[in-house]
Image 1 (cartoon, chains in turn cyan, blue):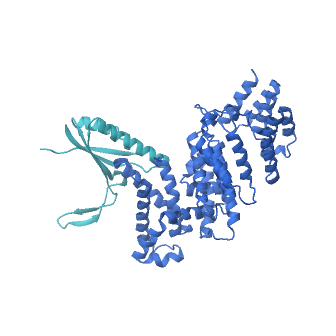
Image 2 (cartoon, chains in turn yellow, cyan; image 1 turned 30 degrees about the vertical axis):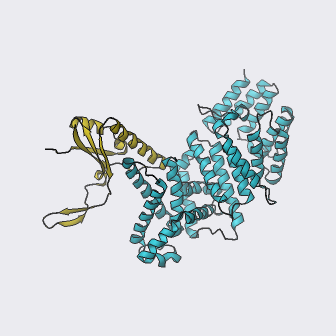
Image 3 (tube, helix red, strand yellow; image 1 turned 90 degrees about the vertical axis):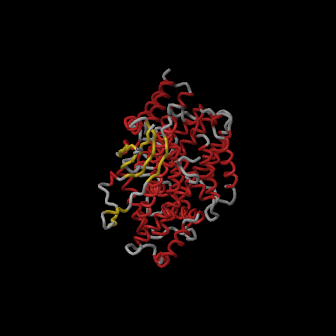
Length: 111
Length: 415
């Protein structure tokens, strides 16, 4: 088994409390399923949208200039899978796609 | 545990009420933005981390933090509540002030004040209902539109207009105001309409209907907690709601079809709600005021405690409808009275009473007038006449559920 990070990018805002409940239920079910099948390493954390970027030899600090709001990483999860292909397939079950977001799947470098 | 959808709705009402005290009624949109941001944040965090142990406290804290952030940024740019301006100016009186407004007890009163503010006589009755749903029960414009079978734009306009009235008034209604009794009856009326909307709603989605009833009950229960407004009429209104809600489960079958009272499985009626309703009814019996809610609750109580339609004390119900006609005469009340008369004295008498209803023409588009005639003709054995009445009723149906029900009655009469 290898480790992979799912980076969640974008995903719209819920339209109503009912919609919000639906989103949480879908995420909960999906993450639970990953755990049941033994793929869950760490559910991870959500990330604040704001931040700073420190850049260059001068260590210039600027307010996080993200390419576009819809591409901001909103959170991550650490999972285990046989290979990148399987990890990507697992990411396909993420509810984020119904809300206009995407999942970036990145293998953790081990050696 | 409470579902998070309900939790969001309730907390939304609490947060808006607290924030309106801080930001002022003319900054309602700002308060609503805070609510919106708080929920989005909750969903972002909870979807990955799961719902926290005390989600309500979590939401309140998140909203408070967000409000403090906003005040730091906006206090110079906006005119907030004048009396609070000094307190909100310095960093630390500001945080203390916000904390004070978010105390559970304060929030309870704020919700009451908000409820009374929404029931402003300058706002139409239907707009009061929509506004209450929106601000106190966290229903979105889209949800209100779908439960009232109205166009989204209509509801949007209605709510916007009402909010302008509130903004112009600037102040939240004060429960020590001399106007309290008048406002209280407007609040009763709004909650009554809200409950009825859920109970008889045109919306086919039964979950949404139950939600409307539950919200009306939750807001009515807030009135009970405050001695200024827990009047006999408030208890009577609560009795009425609880006794009706007890029958909610039995009113529809699994396919979403309406079941008439005589065919309902009474073992499905909620005994706990009936007991609570009965308790409220007893508490409503002090003082000299006899409101329409007292009478309707008494009628609901007779139904809720009868073993069957035959065992129901119809003579007593007729007597109660007579009292209701004294204080709040209307063709609908007269029709319900006529139906009770038919149960007490036979269908022929009921038919006579229906034909004798004053201003019957005002029920020209009310499907349950021909439907009642259909039932009575059916019981008198005049099947063809009954079928015609049911068909007339079905043509007047206001939604598919009613139409299906009335068509089935027409079919039953033609067999």
